[in-house]
Image (cartoon, rainbow, N blue to C red; front, side, top):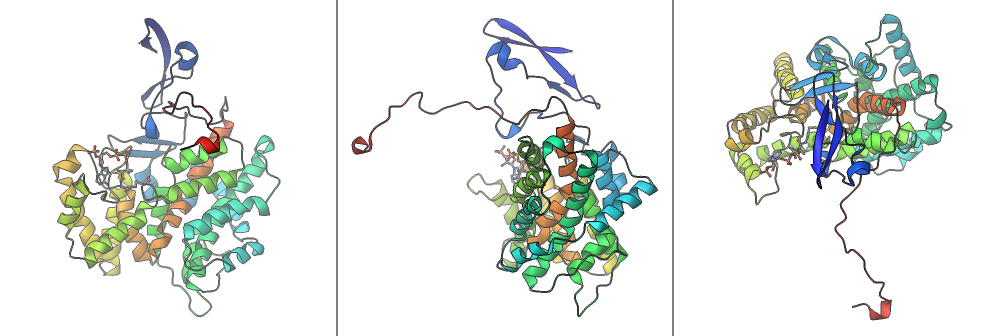
Length: 428
Ligand code: CMC
């Protein structure tokens, strides 16, 4: 199927590509050569940057699938480690594959001890996202010799295992550093999520009791963050990786992109917003009014999404987990109450209805992280830990796809057409 473009009295045929769920796109790769035109799309709101077989989203219907499997099914039945394998290798692992993969993760759990000197010399007030991105980038110092031109499968498996395993150690060590406690190393007898909780919350003077409901909640949080197709951080990993820099540096760039409050940093901002409602005289209704006001830059954090024009399926699952976990723990969090009030008000308000703004994954994830005991400034680190398999899968898919092209958008230049060079003594 083709689309026809008419410009300057000349008709140009452009190929139309079709995805496996029927979504269509005009292939404009030949547009410039044939017409001299480029396309203009600030914020890439309507630009397909690649073809991908990893994750499918239908934003209108609120559907999210990894490798074709509904995320609801994975959240119910699977583990983060299985899901990471699914994303990176394209299938759920069988028993043998899962055992081998787990073993690879165990072997790679340690950080090079020299890396700990870096942590020693950082102020405890540093945001853990800075530490995390720096440590991930520095993996290329400790594990050099990997170049994109000549990597083979075995090297890739090793790098993927290193990143997935070590980010957990880095995250836990960043936290220990911030509270001034000694680092707790991974144990071979514990699984991925259990190990992380133990590394975070046990110490030489107190053991940490692993609770199956907390473990499952964290497992689900990580599964739901594991991939989300061409979002800002994943597109960054692809763009940076397209220069053929190594995987560690590409992922470091993704971590930096994730940190912003419009992306993964929103989970921290949601809790700060809910706390400020709790502490101040601002009511949820005032908050909604502020978010609607054109004169106020305030936004309802954890609401709205570039792709979803419906309830984010991840938020739906996490909201149910909040209720379930509080019931089981026989506790409550006043912030959940405030969040639910905000949601109810927003979903019945014309401003949010017209713009199709619904809660996104970050609206309820922070409340769960708080309940698990994870401090607010670690929330985006948790998102990064969950997103790691997605970033790796996209980096690999891009390098394996042909034709391989460096990412390089164009622009419409609006500056001075031609300016004269004025010597300094004549400048005004
Ligand atoms: N509160 C109030 N108004 C909003 C919000 C919000 N959270 N989100 C969008 N709008 C309004 C926006 O002002 C605009 O209104 P108008 O048409 O009158 O100018 C309209 O809705 C469209 O918004 P946009 O900014 O053009 O949409 P976008 O696709 O560029 O931005 C977004 C998407 C997620 C950055 C935005 O919704 C937002 O800032 N949300 C709050 C931050 C947040 O929760 N981010 C986490 C996203 S999910 C995690 C992830 O995957 O990154």
